[in-house]
Image (cartoon, rainbow, N blue to C red; front, side, top):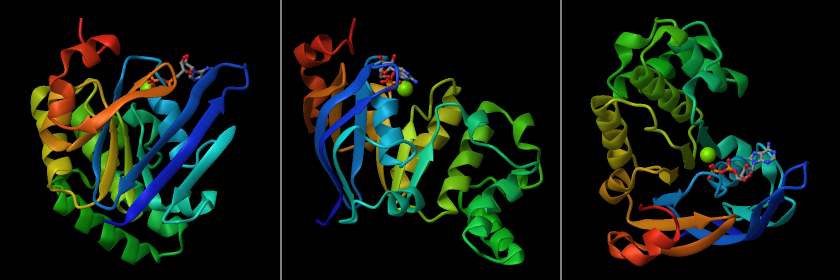
Length: 232
Ligand SMILES: Nc1ncnc2c1ncn2[C@@H]1O[C@H](COP(=O)(O)OP(=O)(O)O)[C@@H](O)[C@H]1O
Ligand SMILES: [Mg+2]
């Protein structure tokens, strides 16, 4: 398996001095489906923002497709924010999905054709001309997936994508993640979902990876889950 992402001793200190990542190292292979679990405040969102190139690390290295270039990462990673409203920019779903292909130089009509193809592949072409902010939580979530897929990412970075979704919307997200060929790192509190779609998990606590291993084995270790505040 080829390595897609390799991070070494990653550290991040927020401007107020809070050290959110204290030396994090791991690899993701091509096609890897990795869960990132940890209590609130453990550093999951910070890690995803660094990997997406939305912020720069204070120390440590990030190699993506063998390169340390932040622009390469910005182009070829797709970050799904926890709150879909933070991610929707345009007045209709189809324009929103076409946004990044157009930004990267694709002609308008080609970008719209691509956007429609992606919406169809996700089974949400009926949402194409709807106003994104008026959609339900589950519809918005699927629309944000369409938006990041349009940029043809090599790695999806998913920040609690099923938080606040009802069971049927959660199921649609799970089915999408089961079927996708694209590698992903999935930050979640939903251990059941992680067990269903991931084959490996990283457990974070206080800015460090405190446990890691294959699933389901790792989550069968109650002591590890308890020590990391994942059970109560
Ligand atoms: N903008 C910020 N400024 C200062 N500290 C922050 C900021 N954002 C997050 N933090 C802190 O960094 C730590 C990790 O936060 P975060 O990455 O959001 O964790 P998680 O996503 O696992 O809940 C927490 O202690 C949080 O309070
Ligand atoms: Mg978070």
